Length: 213
Image 1 (cartoon, helix red, strand yellow):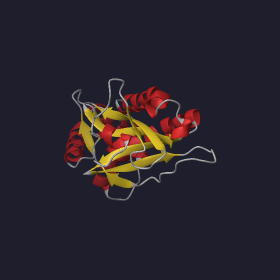
Image 2 (image 1 turned 90 degrees about the vertical axis):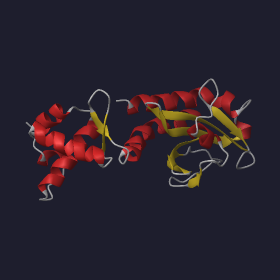
Image 3 (image 1 turned 120 degrees about the vertical axis):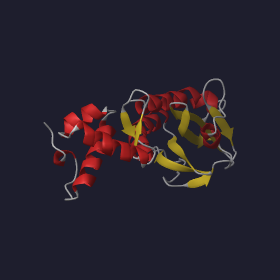
């Protein structure tokens, strides 16, 4: 049987260590209170009490099946961890810059940016913050403004000579992020959507499936 100490840091503040051990279990996989209690050698009543408090503070979320998952306060970290390998593959496959944008109030933030090894490439630093309403395909995807194939493109919207295509990442009914590929227009035959739309939409769908557990 696994102990609480084995799953987290022993700070000597028992209730905090127990609470964060519960979070660690749920980050690994969605779990019921009974399973968490068994895994951490805790009583079910204590697990219910702490999981309920963690849910109230947004560190956990209890879904319709009664399973506890990482809550909205932890979602950006979990989302980034799940998305990064997908974007690495996308960049390697297309040899273009791939990004993950997440909403933050009235802005959008670049959470992940992977760049190719080509001499001429588009570089966006992770942490870049732009208005959610300011142009670009990622802004449109985050607002659900996509076409029937699940992607949206932009051509020289923010920067002349650059094009991009984006697709939304969903958790349940909510759009929680957008996958975006951006590149010089001369390397996009036809249009950004024609060149990369299907692949970007597939990457966004893969991250959506990973978020669903």
